[in-house]
Image (cartoon, rainbow, N blue to C red; front, side, top):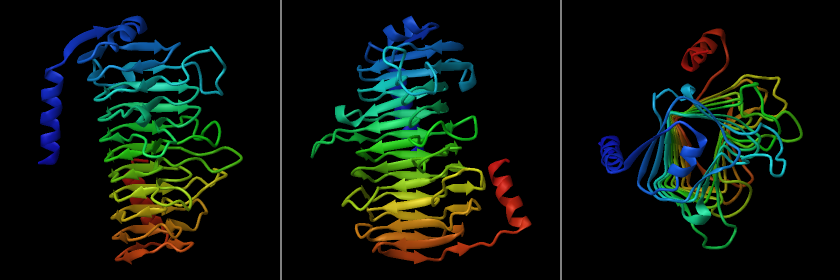
Length: 343
């Protein structure tokens, strides 16, 4: 019922938008300045020399074919930024009710998409898209460091692929979704691949919500060969993440050539979070499938998960561990997990 209501609201919203079709970066750049606009992008490769800055409310961008491989937004390369050499961020969202669907974004020097909690950018929606090969986090929710600063509320990320196509990232400061001060976001039915560091330090998580994020739902995602799977909170700081649920995700790491690995699910200074019915299979060499860490991690529930590896509290964390299944690897189990991933 909730999903049907959400679809009905989106349908009503999009039907109320003025529609424009574009086939060039110039036309696209003009169209995004108009509030209440549905922008249909025709097939092609759109090479961006400047960021697409979304400052008007109620802007929707969608590929005309519904196939994200047909419409590609491309930056100046997956490398460290060079001043005045292109778009460091491809899509920079400052406004409310922005949606993006049916496109591929690639080759940025910072992020492919940045959603700005510091401007109160709410109701961001990303669906049916491919995000690949950025020099930093693929999708960033940034925030002000000031006390009582704004949140980004009610974001949705569904049915997308986040990947590094070389099988490993360009540096350690990468991630899939990295969100600060995000409230009531949902991340569902996506796939994350190869969010892995080549050197120096462990990579950021495939999915990471922290810095006072609240009530995040991370559900039914597949995470494959990433240094860290899903994380709520970071370090020993009070109220890094409050509430939320991590449910029904499949996390597998079997690439021992990745030099850095951590747990599949990590709670750090996260309070009242539920970790339920996930499948976490690690043969990477890291011993713990799920960890909850630090004294500010309290009242968490870790239940009905199936894991290869241990479920471990650390550094004074507290919570309930109940009805989980711990596996040992054999050929039959490997076959089952491979089928789940389609590998």
